[in-house]
Length: 297
Image (tube, rainbow, N blue to C red; front, side):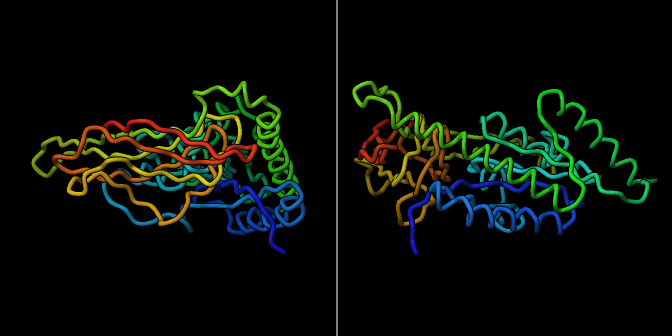
């Protein structure tokens, strides 16, 4: 039987040495949690990972591409470790370390779990790869709870606790937004459009440094509750000028409080420096609202 549900994207982040059995347990646990609790509370946790959901793309360093495609749009994450920290990205000690940093800075919930099951002593290069992980986890424990697990049973327990706590925090934010007096709603709250640019520098075969710019349209939900049925349009844009985004021909779904939706923004020589953008959305009380702002490049 169909039912309404708010979807939260959960990033599964792990270096390549984490056993596939552990990743399978994570996905199965999320599925069972959705079946047992999701319908009752109107939340569905959707697992995402680079191996299943990333698309080929050129232009930036690989981890930066993954950040834009799946990491920044995730609402919460589980990071798993075994014996390796992973490969440095140029910005962090590994891809998983950078993903944790990106999500924590965005104030998203991140659970860190370490497999400590019995295994043969490490030696040689394997021991050398373990040392960076040990140092990273020691620093992480200074400001984060890192849980260890031995076997599937403990992993399932940690996952269920994380899912229950993270979704409960999300629900509290939703309920608090519903209890607000509509007359006291801050007019600055809403789903606001803006343009963001990321610059990367590369050296060509002749040693010349070149700078590349990648623009994005960002819709940021600054309200205290989820914004559903989100959609947007550019107003008074001349047809002959290029100022467009890559998106599906449908509403954008729901943006959690404090969350954002990001779309590649296509510009060309002669594109306007600013375009008015109207965002339509429905707040946590079911009230249809609109937000207008000028997107400037």
